[in-house]
Length: 165
Length: 365
Image 1 (tube, each protein chain N blue to C red):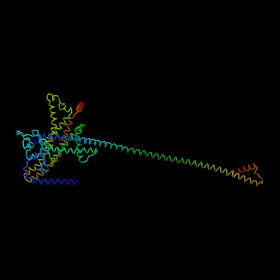
Image 2 (tube, rainbow over the protein chains, first blue to last red; image 1 turned 90 degrees about the vertical axis):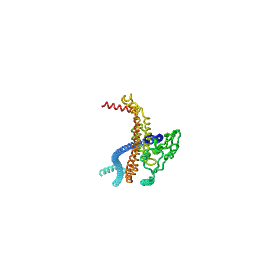
Image 3 (tube, each protein chain N blue to C red; image 1 turned 180 degrees about the vertical axis):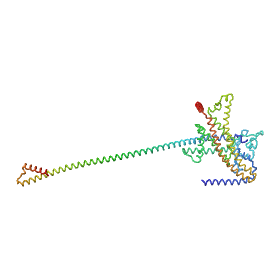
Image 4 (tube, rainbow over the protein chains, first blue to last red; image 1 turned 60 degrees about the vertical axis):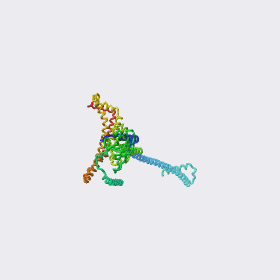
């Protein structure tokens, strides 16, 4: 029956040691450990949630990027089309402007040609009239240079000749 | 890693070879083998501790006793070895106080002095406490140093246990009280576990039948009793003394209150007996199986050889079960403590809501 008899000394020591151990552990070990476990669990939960959100956002961003890319491509196409239209227009305009310019130049040239032709004609006429006068002078041996009516007659004759030509 | 294990096993083999050769020489001079004495010597407390691999060398522990005159005596238990008497104290060989220190008063009557000796069990309690304190304080230190980090190796091993107990048992059962009671429950668990496991180690720092000693389990159960009743709510006490039963069961003769009060006491009592009986049984079986070799050894060498083989196999099997029991008993003690605390922490509104639920179900039915 020795086994079933509680021993006072042992009970005292057991109680004493256990209480001391409990006080030390309850003060320095358990709160730290449990707090840390709790905080870590929370931290991990939050981390998982955060990464899940981040992944979702990333997926969204990828989808967005796709959309933006498509949009950009569309815009690019449009811009290209516009550009080509614009190019054609510019070319057309340029052609038009060039044509006008050319016309202007041609016109100017024509005018100047006409002028020079007229000048030349006048020159020619003068010379011809002078020559004619000389010829007539020689022919008639008569100085008709002062005779205005004679010169007018010759001029008229020359005009007629010109029209014939 | 493999090299280290090889060296360790080699060392063990060498030690055992050495020890057995010494033992073989010693055996001739030993007296006849008494199974009951051997088993009881291992199960009970003693004033000295046998050192490993030696029957002759013992660790003599201090004896602290107070005699009838109120005088304290402190001396080594070496003086009491072999039935010697020192300062009037001796270890009783028979009677009520067998294996305990006794003294004789002036009238010649034997009496038991107040005995605060550091016995084998006391030293084992200290060892267990030192192991627990160093492991857990180291753990706490580690956690302080590495917040938000997953532990490895030793700290992780302890953490698995704490994590399981705290998040699987304590928190679901106690709810918001978990943090308040976790230190006590966890300390209880670790003390029982370490004490149990120390008991399974056969040689010096272990091998003590600590949790199979009624004094130890008495203290553990008593502390649980205190915690349960100290933190019991008003509702708990109402349920004990004025339970929700028909009036005749509690008014003139308080049948139910008596039963309830009995229940308050039997709960920790059952804890005490369960742990004590389980661990004691484990030790007795382990010792019996080893003793079998020596008992049947008398029948000849062939029989002894066969029994040795069988005993070793059975012992190994039992040891493995014992290791499991060490954990299970600590776990059961701790879990029941948690449950009892939660039962004492009942709140009134819980009951009301339950009643309301019942009423509503009745109405719907």
